[in-house]
Image (cartoon, rainbow, N blue to C red; front, side, top):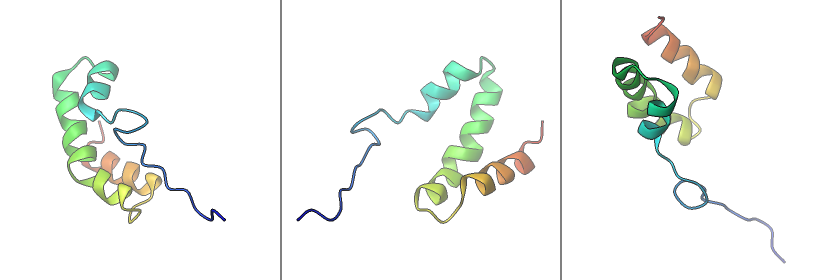
Length: 67
């Protein structure tokens, strides 16, 4: 009897490309670099490990770049 199914979607079922996503969403290179540095350099790892909620991750990011 199967009890659990674990799916690894990152680069398996879908592509994980934060830099490409930021390029599509923001034309300003400075904004792309800033968001990449804030979210994907450190906060994303914590969020991915479930030690940081999405809401808290956004809150921290907003404090680091309020503009």
